[in-house]
Length: 475
Image 1 (cartoon, rainbow, N blue to C red):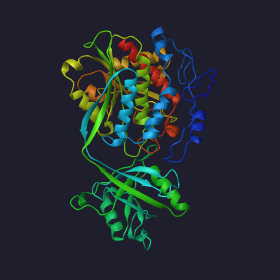
Image 2: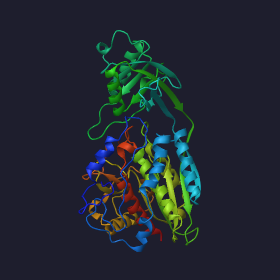
Image 3: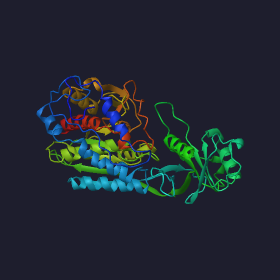
Image 4: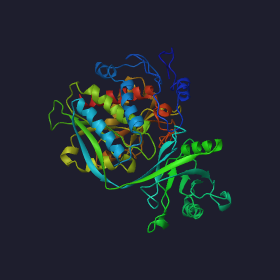
């Protein structure tokens, strides 16, 4: 990556020195701070970082490239990932995000609406230091539905490692027990802690297979379904485990743990439309992303990055005449199984489905992880379609085609909901060079923050690729 300078020969990947400078600016886990990220500064005709030659853009491309701004998109990302934070499907935080997105799209002049749908109950917890120190210890974790809910406990933390009886100190009455999570022994581990008088159990996630790191989770205790455990039981992420143990190694650590049940939930898709010159029954081009997150993750890259890409392209495209109707869709509850996008597609009559020219689904389009040098085109069917064809063509015009993957078969994002019913769609994202399964270490973790996991240069390239492709389809 560059920091205002254009090298004579652009690198074949984003420069690591800038990424490392960003990492030095990161705050401790869980902290929220404004971080100055390196800014993309290339002109329309400059060679992009990672491109193999200068661009050969068209006048139509220039209309998009001259206006899109990753910096402007970043202001929305700060609201989503820092001000709101984890956005769990159906909870108040997801609704707060939906209202913010709808307000922004409405302000841009789009016909905007929320599309509600029911989702499953959620069980969450907040783990914090009651005195406010250390200041970064205030995290969302998952709570067990088969343990104490809607309750708050406080106590000194004690780490009992593997949780065998010999790992316990003499007295843990009223203390919050930290114990390594082993799925096959989880109920036995809870029973031991309960028998010793613990006030709560914090399961510490096992380490992921590098480079992946594990997420916060809601432990299940099947044997306690009829008679819930009388103390809170929660699941913390790998990064939280490491931080807790580091704090305990430094001295006494007092924790407050609050669990909550969220029932009777409604999630929302945020839908915005601008009718094109072909009229209300004309063709449709959609640009989309999901705005929800997994438990405990601020979701800066997954998928705050795709969400703010949609907002920025909505701003740019609002005033450019096009033939097709433009739709921007921000999906709720994707992390629970593509629930929002599947609900939306199910509501579309066949005549409405037939109007779609292409759906551009953007999921994780801005990671700063060094090895994520390939921009992947993922198709649920494995076949190319209008969406992949247009992005491939835009990549050629931008001189970026060596960084673009061939069309690769993979679902697991909202493009699948559309392709399942025959609508041209694909998912676009930055991932490791060898495989789309190579995702950055902060994926689905508390470390998916702007400071640790966002590159404005990659976001800018994503904006240009999708913006030029979507405009080419719609105009």
